[in-house]
Image (cartoon, rainbow, N blue to C red):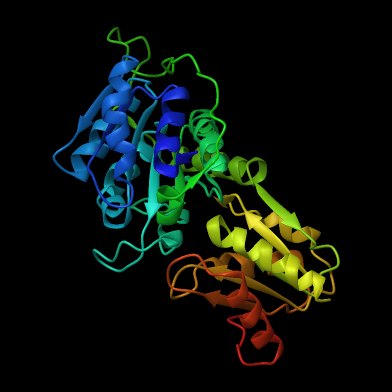
Length: 349
């Protein structure tokens, strides 16, 4: 039995992370607190920076040297890191950023939420880039995604974001930890010998780079979509939900099935690239798709509506069940589904 943040931190050590730089913020602080003692035990470096900005810039330094570097934060702390994430993306450096999402505008609250979806899936900072965004629905899945996050980041030379939630970071579950990976430096990093020529900002051809970036992101979209689905082949309505709300939505889907409703679920594991291919498996006669989200405004629904439009010539309505923060209970999802059937909740698209 391990707390989510602690399990994620230990998984990072076992994945070969040897630099953590960050600043404490609830509900992510246990990650850095644990690594402050754990990383020195394995010959790594832990730095509590004076700010979130300093932390992400230290990660840039570690990534530039080819080291598996990590930072974690929540809400406003991740906002402060956006310029650094943009720079990592521009320089095509691999790193992992963990966002233990909490609710709110500005400083917000400490409640578990999914309100950062739009920021994480759209790049978040200035520039023309995307981060790979992984969304675990259990502590075990989060642990397994740490290694995957680095593998994908290094394969494509991008930033991977592990987008967890406050509740996932604070709760406890049984977990099997992965084996240790031998730490290694990426060969393209600085080695003190100028083995690989570095191109200065004034020597770069941005037009040529843009073509290559477009090709890279197209390859990620084609090859790295991940999801789980259940019951979509004959469903009249398909729910779309990720993370912890995805777990309760699965429970609702199974209970509604037992009650005679033909419903299914698509649970995105990658929020970017969004699993558009999953929507090709949906019953052609589906009557609607329904997102279940822990935010106030409905963010996931935009991608879900676009995905069904890409995969169907019919005008399929898209609904959003938004629960502001926390993990929506099964009974609430079921009750709101029946409101959709009764016309009490209108479609978004």
